[in-house]
Length: 155
Image 1: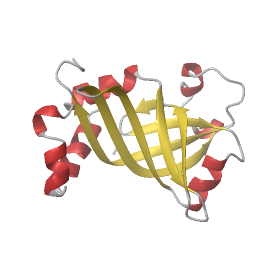
Image 2: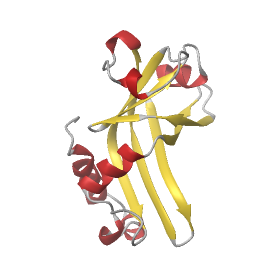
Image 3: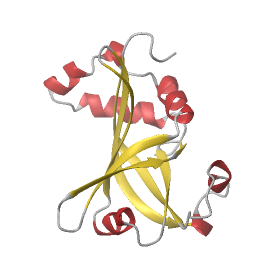
Image 4: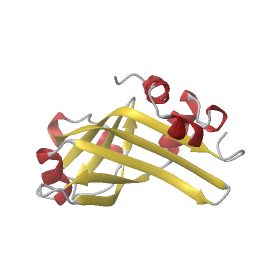
């Protein structure tokens, strides 16, 4: 799924299968609409991405990203821990959050990632990120999405 509206559809499917505790923690009136979800992710530049090291230990790191439909593209350097982790186990989570206490927004995206060479990635990605260090991209294809926004945090 990579069309522009698909993150909202994935979120709907996620909550349709969610445990009652999870659904109650993210009540429908607090979830971002498909349009809000896309707009919010597009205006943010950084997230925390989690992967699993080959020995099973977790690895989390801040990263910049660009959204393309239900895929999130993150720059990498060749041989990085993230690249090695994803090649060994492609299951990844990504969190975009801001605020504290009763004024916060959180988007959690889980999915399958792959490593893509610069030549095979969309050509406009590099235009949106500054850095000669970019040697490849991680493409995260969302298959679970959950979001929460306190009243007034997202328009």
